[in-house]
Image 1: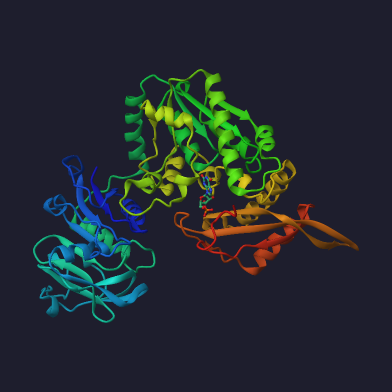
Image 2: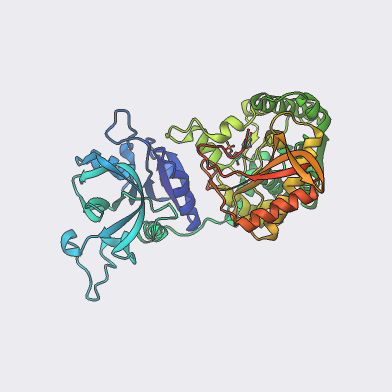
Length: 534
Ligand code: XMP
């Protein structure tokens, strides 16, 4: 299958470049920016994209490309830091700007007499090799920029094809090699014609053929899984989230269901009706060994009287491990493979890229379990989703026949309602929160808003507040609603509900849940707030 290799220098947008290329139907792979390209990578690679970076190219220790990259003779599209890197490496100049170019920035493609490129009789730039990247792109458009350094003199052999305000180079091309540079970010959705430029590169310049689809992935993965697993057993821990459910569906579809052991631990901290829904769907997909462990009482007992968020997380994580160990021992499948719903993003974020991404969400959320460590040491881990982005996991779930309510579900944290009940967690509070959360989600679905929101949920606050009902004074719980938009959970913006939606949802909650007397809407972005409250 044709592919595009992306060299990651640590930009927050690297993942987005990878996703955009796949949205074009071409497989993309992200590797650390300073790695050599070996023969196995080059076999199917049609072009290379260099990402941006938090580094300045002239800083000591800034990542560099390995000589094998340009020696490969493949087309290269260098974005932001990428083109600054090549500019310095080729004897040009990169300097700090007095003002950063950030956000929407107009770009002007230079007239042909300045670039020395001829156009055909109709004035079209089609066919001129230096312009292949700009086919069909207007002379002026609004790009998306995010850089503090700029190219003040192009490298040897490079010329400027387009500039931003102040004549700062924004589009560059090499005179003899199929290498381009963009100071802006075509992968960001606010960049006009960004997808057209990427498509010009992937198809027009690299000549890549479309071959990436979830059907193709499924066929490839099925073959690989069968070869690796043979007739051994596979254990998968089901969390109720999209990833593990899709991983379960994939195993059931590609292996003999008799080989597949699914383990679900009910912590008592799940959403309303979640347990039944997950079980029902897995059974419908043909699960034969589906083990649901009711551990609610143990989790709640361990959490009794605990208020500190970190301590709660630790207790929940440890209890998970204990229940897991006991159940696996009971099932007598100690030599089984362990399947995990790890995604491509998890791998990149946990240090496969060169960027300073140690501070990432998933790695510190995921519980380090002895079971996982043991299986890893024995070479018995399989990660059948590890080349997929979240959107692709959802698409694969649809191909595997999972219903929309499952595949389109918002993310849900491992510790569940435990981190959405501030202060001590009790059964009563879990029940109240389950009820409020399910009303909130039902109202979003009813209004057709659920799918345009990345994550929405309710939080039970550790305060009560005064209210009135008839002639009586009440003293009830306060809940906060949270709804955000995000690409990947790393940053988030508040969802801008209409006031009438908020008023109606609030009234529905206080009318239906007698223990709740007040509803507030959380209007904090991430940063500085996090998405969850604990
Ligand atoms: P924060 O609160 O860190 O959340 O902004 C970012 C995303 O991660 C989810 N989250 C978790 N996911 N285990 C998980 O698997 C956890 O412990 C955990 N904590 C937060 C959160 O729901 C959001 O989508």
